[in-house]
Image 1 (cartoon, rainbow, N blue to C red):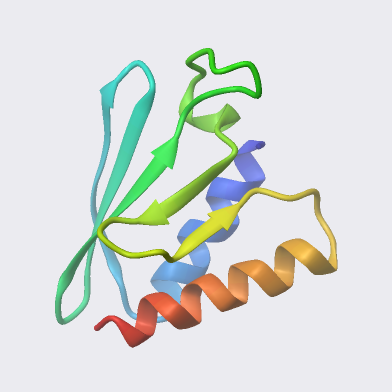
Image 2: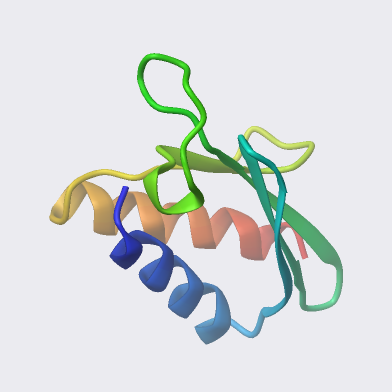
Length: 96
């Protein structure tokens, strides 16, 4: 993943009325965004590389909304990324 993944995800979250309350790096291999609209949701980031070694948030390969099966993988720029980001945001909005 690159910083642009995080930037685009953050922008889409905020455009739909969510507020990012905090961005935490809990451990070397785990980051969490706490977001709020009507409810509070937690977005957990997988901070591992393909070999299973911990990496910084900017190099993670995906995220998941806690206690759901709603996830987003950080694809290269293009249609897959745009479509998957839109679907992720839509499912997030349905949780609220």
